[in-house]
Length: 346
Image (cartoon, rainbow, N blue to C red; front, side, top):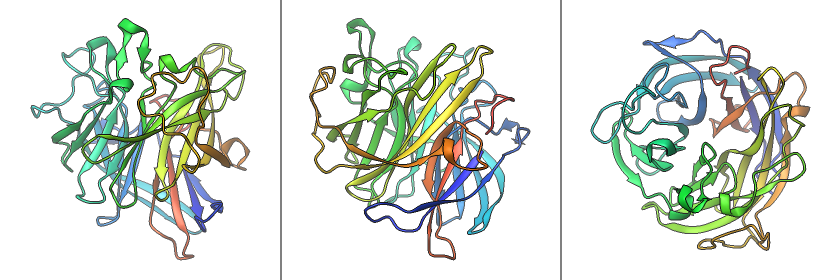
C-alpha cells in the first residue's frame, strides 16, 4: 500500500489532501530478492528514483534496499517499478547474515539521503540477543559501509540495569534537517526507565534526538505517544514509525498502532502529527522521564488514516517528500510495511 498526500502549504497548519493510493503486488521479485517489508524511503531528486529499505533480516534475501520509480501526478498514483535491490554490507564488505549465520543481523527501519553529500544513512533496531545495540550507519549508493554514528549511551540496550531501549522498539525514525546540518532520530517506544509502553488506557513518553553530523547529541525532546488505538485480543503496541523534518523547528511524526486479533492477524491504526519544537524542554542527559514532569513537544493531528475514504488501514512505516506537482503542491509519499504477510495490505 502506498498513500500519497499533498501539502498545499506548509505554513502554520499544513493543508493536506489525499491524491491516491496504490496496492503493490505481492509477487514482485527482483534479482532473486522479494520486494516487501518496506520500513524506510527517500527520494533521489537528481536521479528521479525512490530508495526503499526493507526490514527483512536476510531471511528471504540479503538485507537490502531497493531502487525504483514511482509514477504519480496531481490526479493519482499510477504505478511502481522496482528496478534493483542493493545489499547492505558490513564494515568488512560482507552481507549481513540471516538467523543461521554469525554476527549482527540487520533490522533496517529508516533510510535517508544526505542532502550535503548524496551518501545514505540508515538505522537498524539492533540485535540484542547477539549483543549488538541499535545503530546508525553511513553507506554509499552501492550499500558499502563508510562509517557509523555513535549510539547515544541512553539509547543502548542495558538488560543488566533493566534500562535503555526496548527490544524491537528502538531507532524507527530518521530525518535530516533541510540543510543537512542536523539528523533527527526517533525512538519507537519509551526507554525502559522512562515508563511503561503505551496501552489502551494510556500513552507514554518516547525520545526524539537531534544529532550533529558527527553524531553528537545537540538536543533531545520528549514526545508523548497516543494510547493504543483499539482493544487487542493478544498483543498490541503504539509508537513512532517515522519522522520527517519540515524546517528547523517543525517535524512530521507518524504514529502507528498494531492490534492483534485472536487469529494472530494485526490491524493497524496510523495518525500523522505536526510537531513544534517551540516551548519543549531539552531533556538531553536526563536519566528518566517516568515522573512525567517534562514539557514535551507539542503535537497537532493532521491526518487520522482510519478516517480517509477508500483507503484501507495499513502498516505505514515510511515517509518522504517527493517532487512538486504541476499544481505547485509538494507531495508527501508514505509506504506501508507488509511484513511479507500474504494477508496484510502493503
